[in-house]
Image (tube, helix red, strand yellow):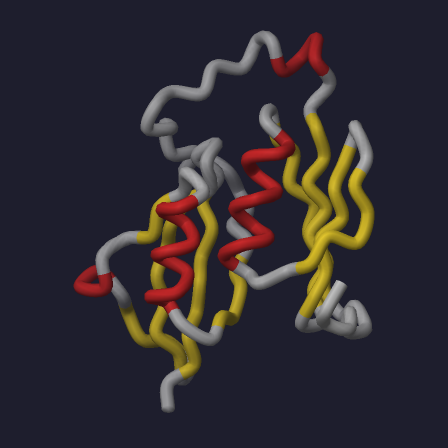
Length: 133
């Protein structure tokens, strides 16, 4: 690894049907480094954040259908939010890894940040915030 891993201050666990694809999305959009990779989970770290992408057990995963493009899972009581250096860099990374970020025209400003929602490759809603200059 060419970047030091910072101390962890916050974390989130994301359950995924396709652990490899979902890990690539979070690794790329949040500029995280792999800390641990196993068949059951990946631990991604950086910038004081830890994201654990946990594989859904095969028996359960076989019942889950992911459409293309994925149906956005907006009926959930939680939405992870991440501060990023550049929304445009997130957009490029999301597109390259099967995710999505809404157009900049749909952004809103809240507490000194430009805010946009998107989703990962399996349709899990994610919010990204770029601090205003």
